[in-house]
Length: 290
Image 1 (cartoon, rainbow, N blue to C red):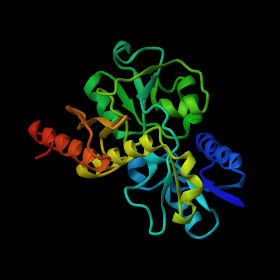
Image 2 (cartoon, helix red, strand yellow):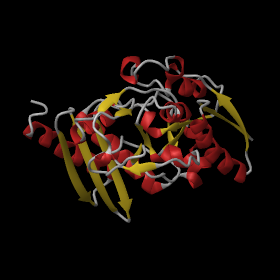
Image 3 (cartoon, rainbow, N blue to C red):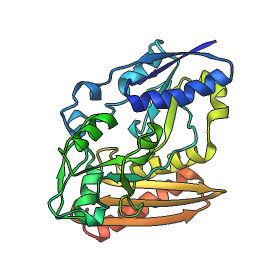
Image 4 (cartoon, rainbow, N blue to C red):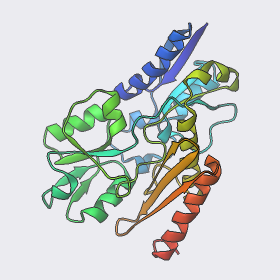
């Protein structure tokens, strides 16, 4: 049996496909890669907030829906809260680290005032403005290689990236980890999602990591309480150890940042909702929202 895998053609996407492909081959399946260009790939000079939601996923999922592919491989943080009818998340391989890192010669607190830091994320930009209001935040787009090239050519004094992508690409460059409470990651950062029709679920059971799936569910629920998605200036991360889920959620308007914490043995859906309500309450208390 041959399984056709749809995904974007970026280096990071191909690395993620490789993880799924190698698993399928180990199970005796043949694979075929179907490269898809998405809306995000066509407007590389526009900020993501101007392009709209679902820019990394729609065309890839369409390939599964119309029969050109059997499964789609995504960075789970790029997925919308609701998939198209007929598709579901079939598996989440074990999560890579969710943290953000500052690629720079200097740690965050040692950056000279006036340094230009590149990010395409309103979450990262707002967290940075709170921690270092003397820093200049500039928009940056493109894949990991493109962003790193702009940094090494001196267009920026530093850029903020997900550590998971650098690890998967085996990129060795000086970078500094950012604290989970000060720089809470985007929901589902570091998670790969395999999307497809339910008839292929059983094939992917062995690659599905239950703890990762529970973390992903809890984080999505927290975002659902606050509203929005990848263009909302909030971060949330859960870690599951045994039956204990520990979560951190943060929101920033660029002037203030609020952060809440939760440890619970509740199911992931309830845990995420509780953390989201805690964050919402703190946002109102601090006057970030009315």
